[in-house]
Amino acid sequence: MVEERNLDGAVAIVTGAAGDIGGGITRELAKAGCDIAIADLGVSEDAAGDDAKPDNHEHATDLAADLESLGAETLVVECDVTDAAQVEEMVETTVDEFGKLDILVSNAGIITYSPVEELDEDEWDAVMDVNTKGVFLCARAAIPHLKEGGTIINTASIAGEIGAEGIAHYSASKHAVMALTKTLSLELAEDDVTVNAICPGIVDTPMWRDVLTPGTGEAYEDTIQRAIPLHRDQKPEDMGRLAVFFAKNRNITGEAVKIDGGITQD
Ligand code: NAD
Image 1 (cartoon, rainbow, N blue to C red):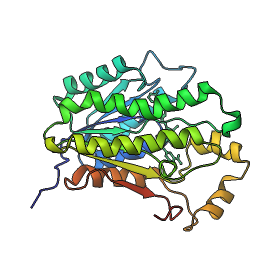
Image 2 (image 1 turned 90 degrees about the vertical axis):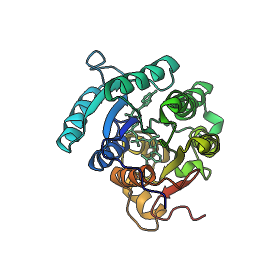
Image 3 (image 1 turned 30 degrees about the vertical axis):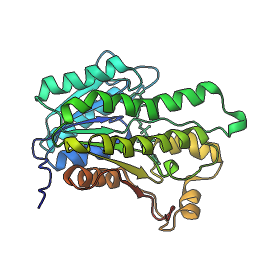
Image 4 (image 1 turned 60 degrees about the vertical axis):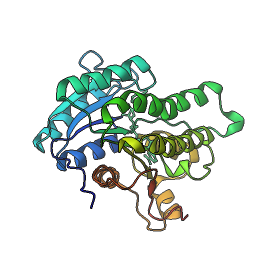
């Protein structure tokens, strides 16, 4: 029998951790016993009030206090996942602080709403850079430390499995995350490293509040009632509980699990 991974004292990096889903993932990992590096843009003391992410420093500070109250040790790390040097530094700082790395959760992501006919190259590049290249850079930097039993969990999306009007670039970037997840699972199997993806459906975060709801012009609650068979949205904690499941299980790899209330069926 293959034992579960012991998460007591396991060390996890979560990117995009100052965001809503990142917060849910870190909380569930902390409850399961992990120590956490909270990695995001604009989280350091110096970056406080960063124009691009004005609230991230506060979110990360509050989150660290929350996780510590759950028994976790924490580290807040400034990291732009599109910058290879910053990603390397994030991993090295985490390993210096905690002595090891067991779990990488690549969760940072961005979205814009533009039908292809109106989609700028800059928008395409920015979304691909964060959502796809960021996942690649984080995996590449973490792999040497994860060998012998670690795990990678990527936040993809149901848009990584189906087309999605108005967000072709986002959908393409998340399909690429699925391809990376499957390929990494093969490349790392010899090292007993598992690699899986979480595919959220609709979670009430700035992605919906600030981008998708205005983009589609449909009220958020109407989208929930129309699009989700279970007629309720998904929560950051749902994603966190799946992250813990993937982190513990050592015989599931190359998989993507959708948490979407029944939107997608295959
Ligand atoms: P969010 O905006 O609350 O969180 C995203 C986080 O990523 C933010 O904290 C942001 O600062 C960070 N980030 C952005 N660019 C970054 C960069 N270059 N380097 C480091 N961090 C960066 O949104 P969320 O909904 O919590 O998104 C988390 C993940 O879930 C994303 O990958 C997103 O694509 C995915 N997702 C969300 C939904 C949803 O319904 N909200 C659905 C499917 C997938």
